[in-house]
Image 1 (cartoon, one colour):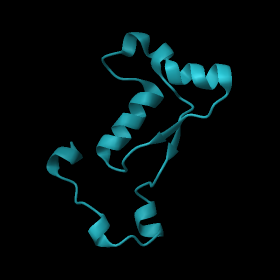
Image 2 (cartoon, helix red, strand yellow):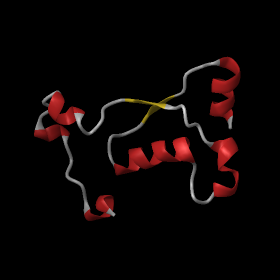
Image 3 (cartoon, rainbow, N blue to C red):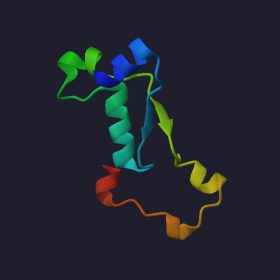
Length: 79
């Protein structure tokens, strides 16, 4: 609600700096569309205009980041 009000009333851009892994993407998706637990009130709690700030998975190859900067996904990450 706070982030939506910042954007709606003050026109301040909302940026999300999250990890480029399944957990970071999940956090960003909750800000964009809400969580299952709060689905009854998602309209007032979401921030659909949030912009992703940071690396995307496709950037790893584009910018030739070395393998030591990458972590393999675990079976839990893949779920």
